[in-house]
Length: 402
Image 1 (tube, rainbow, N blue to C red):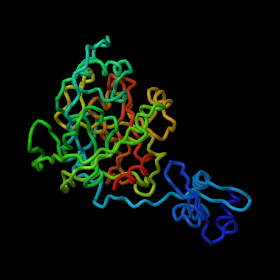
Image 2 (image 1 turned 120 degrees about the vertical axis):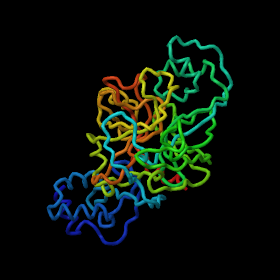
Image 3 (image 1 turned 180 degrees about the vertical axis):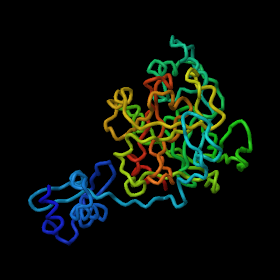
């Protein structure tokens, strides 16, 4: 490998003339083109650092990007530069609160938070035959969304049999604003038989309006109708029903930005460049989850959501529950696991909400995960939340934000 690097530095293995690029996947599953390293600014810069001795781990990184290696040439999978549809400032918050554990967030702490309201349009079903004591309650409260919604398989069967409250309206899931007109959330939030009434942006306390705190009064929240829901096409596929639990929601009109109370969060399109650390370094970092989910782990039905936006610090790491779940996914990079078994956890009603990490300076926040599933009983000693990895789906997101 060192000989190859020397050849790269000297240019002997490559002609300066362009080569026909073939589509490839980078180690972190982004779309790329298999080309000469001299034609790839990002990797060529790393090569120069290696040759000058300023990057100790660069050789190992470059090796992972090789897509063609034979007697005549070596090519690398160069990540495609995708122009972000996001043009506004992102990820900056104007509060100085410190996140300790599961607690009320400060007013304005997470200005990109969104909550969806939906109406149940199903007709009442038959009698409930499942003996599990809380399955029928889930169905009756309209929470039969999918097997990823903190449910056991038995509860899923019950959901097709138990009566529902026809016409009931309520808050269902969270999400984050990623541009003036797009919200990122979970695909399982949008089940058959429900109609999304609107997305609420700039909310903090569901029980009052306007919100007031620390000498500041927030503007009225914006209720914006949904133009369309774009679920990942492979969500719920027979081979892996829990996979690809991610969705985009296009709002009927752009949200009005506000310096403090309404801002988009940043997307991790190029973490190494933007956040100043790679995806592999997410492990072991303390992320923040936020949402209006239940705060009582015994509220199995998810009927009593929190009025006030909640936040919790969760360490990104793999424990036993996470490892059991990863067996069901064809690629480990599709999900992130977070939680340390200390009672802090995501729970019913938090679905679709974000797992967030700051950049190395702590100034900007990035949404790195979307709340997907967890244990039936939240906050237990071995509880962890399962989050769809946003970075894994960046190509799909940008392709659909049109």
